Image (cartoon, rainbow, N blue to C red; front, side):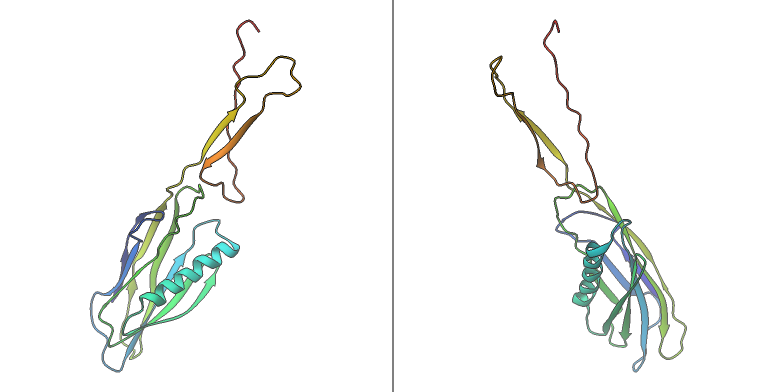
Length: 193
């Protein structure tokens, strides 16, 4: 029996990336036999195009980089927002396969995002019973804040040809493509108007 466990919360760009471990919880793989298991990742909602492709490529690379003696990482296949990678475990597998999925420390103000990593479809090459369980929902807490600043002229001469000028600027964070931000601007009129 194989079981997947892992981290459920991580702060974007944190030095400690979320970590997952696929472990043999009972039985062993006999010499000359192998076991296979699928690891899948369900992408955050709304992730499409190049961004989704980058996420999938990173998932596969992170698994390949973590591969150890007795673990072979297969190709990735994607259906909808779920990408599945097959692992083959040999008798030399030490019983624990740990991998991390680092987050990108960007400046996009995107709020929290979640993805799910799951183990399923275990099989043994010698026909023995094999099971895989474990589904880990990981939430990436965004560390970015959108900050806006208003600057402008503090003095203007009445009747002047140049009107006062004001600039609203983003001083921190970035608005993701397809998203919007709103801000209220107000003016306080002099008394008596």
